[in-house]
Length: 146
Image 1 (cartoon, rainbow, N blue to C red):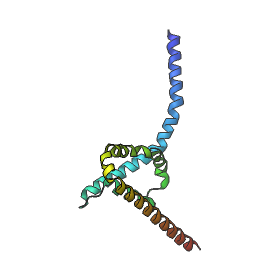
Image 2 (cartoon, rainbow, N blue to C red):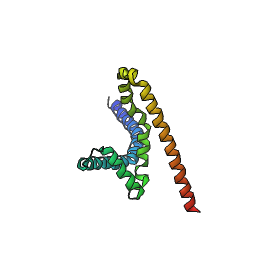
Image 3 (cartoon, rainbow, N blue to C red):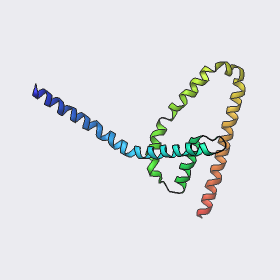
């Protein structure tokens, strides 16, 4: 019986070591970035509570991270792996919206065409403005390098 217990303990330690080392290495890479993002989100929520008009705290947190990254107070490498990992699950965050749309089928029958036109016009406007902004910024960057 003692031999079986020793073999079981050795096998358990071997499995845990083989699976835990990559997991711990992954956490060591991703956890600091998550903590930075969480702290900036919480600071954004706190600031949003003091602003006299309604602004989501997440938006304030995004503005904070943008300013800190642009000013190089926070290097991109600190949050890059965490944001890459979060982006993997981005599609999952849209599931509640899809369920809400399905549950609001009666509204779609009444307002569906209007909503579709609004969505198409909005998407085209974003594409147009983003493209022109990108062209403007790349032209000004190329002009400043020459």
